[in-house]
Length: 167
Image (cartoon, rainbow, N blue to C red; front, side, top):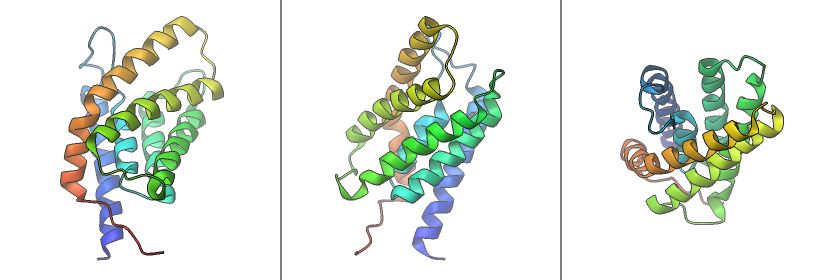
């Protein structure tokens, strides 16, 4: 099997496992009212190992799974998918612009990516209680940022280092 194909399958498997973990334990591991968004954090970390198209694919799958699990009551299903796809694309797009093989950089990407994904979701599907949304955004971003380093180590262990293509 082609190494890129194998890596892609591993990345999608990691996202699927994150969806199972989110469904099984996501609501039970609250800390001061914060609930992790494992799918978004894992999608951002996985996008570090992809190019722009691969990052968009990982973001799309994560958004689709998150929307399926969350099932926003006032709509927003497509907004979750689009926001995660755009963030995955943006992280993957940085492949040729910066060196991303640094776990501390992964923490920064998860911080900014979670803020961006949730802000885009708010832009596409505005929420009624802005103060509640802002508190939830801050706590979820903090939780995801704390989980970023261990997630990066696990994903890198599973998929190995990024494959750079000669262009």
